[in-house]
Length: 124
Image (cartoon, rainbow, N blue to C red; front, side):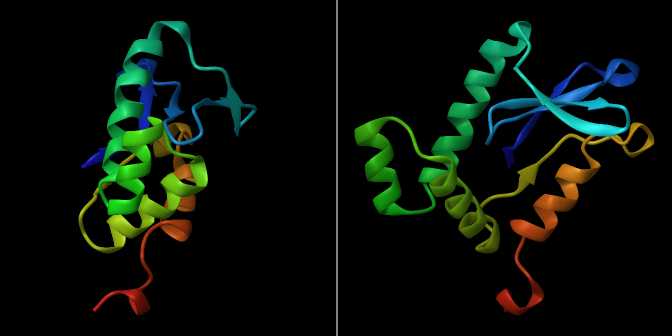
């Protein structure tokens, strides 16, 4: 499993999430998701989970892993392509934050399903 989001707040205080791919916080602004800077109190945790996400993406492809080991990072497009490949092959299971009752993370979950999860035609 690999976290794509980290929650901002807990239980009844859940008010958004940090997108670890885009490195932006997402909260609700008038019933619509709005991007913002990552809250300072989550900076260390975000850094830790972002590193785990990049490593998981890099491990899906030997060339990408070599690039990651040399440069220490991956671009967003490379990471998304690697995550999609890992999810399609069943090597990675994405984990996201959402609360349907508050309409938080629902758009991001639907985007993940449409953009990154394999279609039935791609599966055996």
